[in-house]
Length: 65
Image (cartoon, rainbow, N blue to C red):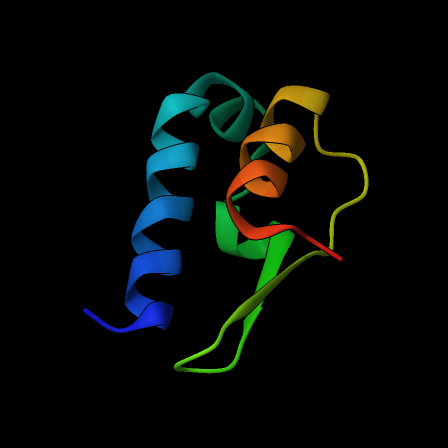
């Protein structure tokens, strides 16, 4: 599995974990983040209004910038 695919799958797992937020806001996880690279990936949070719990789940896995 590539780094990009791993990141994509992990982010979708976060979306599923916090499905109440995403359903009520009408957003998808990929509306809120950007994945850069293929082998050595970086994840950037684009939506600075994400709840702390979601941001934390992303940041602890990817050391988000």
